[in-house]
Image (cartoon, rainbow, N blue to C red; front, side):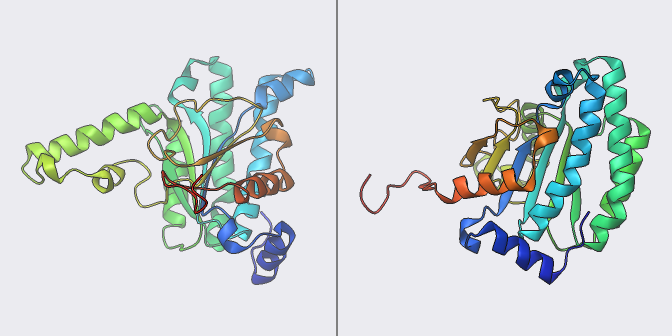
Length: 257
């Protein structure tokens, strides 16, 4: 990961060419297309995942340099367990390797790491690295880096409902006390801002059970490139598209349109 300094951050923002209020505060990315990238090159899918893993530090660095407050990466869904065992095992090895390799760098660059998703079912090696990364960066105050591993939004919503239901049952809250803030605070992403911008690579046009509650008013940007080919320049294009949007949140523009 490239060093984060005031100089490199200023250079990155200058290269982007947008005003601070034009840059999304929180960004979510569905990292898609590793397998198709590999197939086009006659390689096994695991080679595509390995190539995609090398892209992550570059995009994390670029997001941090642009002073994004939260970057959430969708890496492994609850449905992905249905993939071939060899592919799943290779992915788990990559997660453990990435977290081990980048843990101290994240801490030194003031990046706060968060795991989003279920712990149940993940190998001990991955759980250990997740815990160590979270512990090593718990004091950090910079960008949140949320990695969604073993994550599914419908399951997350159900967990939140059950959590609140138990509080009602215990007499801690009344049903009429339940509001959007309480529900958001019961999700895996509690404490981090909802995404302003969702990026999906490989040209696919679906959410794939990702952050269904949190993406309510996010702007969408679909990139045709596969994740192993995703670059900081492509991230910049997404940000420029975002900056050109008019986010009304149900209101109308001053012109009345």
